[in-house]
Length: 329
Image (cartoon, rainbow, N blue to C red):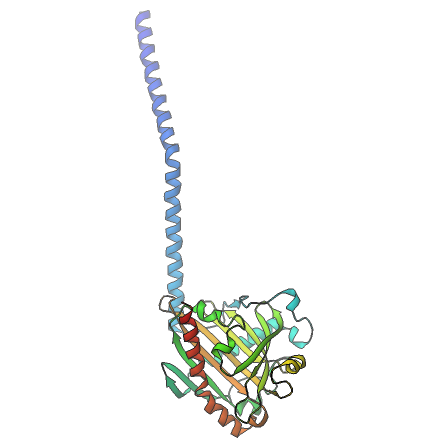
């Protein structure tokens, strides 16, 4: 009897040992599979993120292609080069309410760009130049000491708005980068003779002084411009500009190439819209301008002369952008 009990106990122990061994082997196998499981889940998560990113991108492109750009969801872009605490403008009217002024300026520029009542002036190399009246535009209303001198009312309506639209065979960032510093301004703007930064209102907004060359009998023009950079919800980029007439920048004028001979020009409203197209390989570029050239050109005759010049100026401007972005490939 005792022998049978011992034999039975031995078989039970052996079976138990086999179960424990199998359990340990299974556990060991499970531990070995942990990295594989994690890697599989990680790949699945990355795949989901990529698919979600593409869905968002497609939805944004649908909004982009199906409707006009909007400031909703936009934010200030701190890409401009040169900002530091030492360059910050802290005093004067332009240093106050800068966020509100920047947003209102961007809104006005964007509204002008998307208007559909433009009249064609010229077209060359797939660069379309158009014009329209400024009578219905709101160009004034900024706080005292902020904005252009001839803003609002009859003054601004004497001049015409000019718009240029084109596509550039370069990614958006290559075109946009040309506008982040002053290094290339004279390369794409043949009328610009000199340009310097006066200071920054914030990392996304700078004040610049620039001067044009003498054209025929007309004195070189200089202007002081607020430049605000903004990124739209769909990834498009907007650069909005206007003159800051309260800043005389006498030191820049006195040190300029044509010192003592400048006539102040007024940028009533201006801007550039950069939109990515064709799977981010090309850029749709739009620019608008409403300006008072000042001096003898500050008249209806002057406005006519200016509008005639504007028919060819934007074409040369965009052609230069194309050349610069292609040569940087």
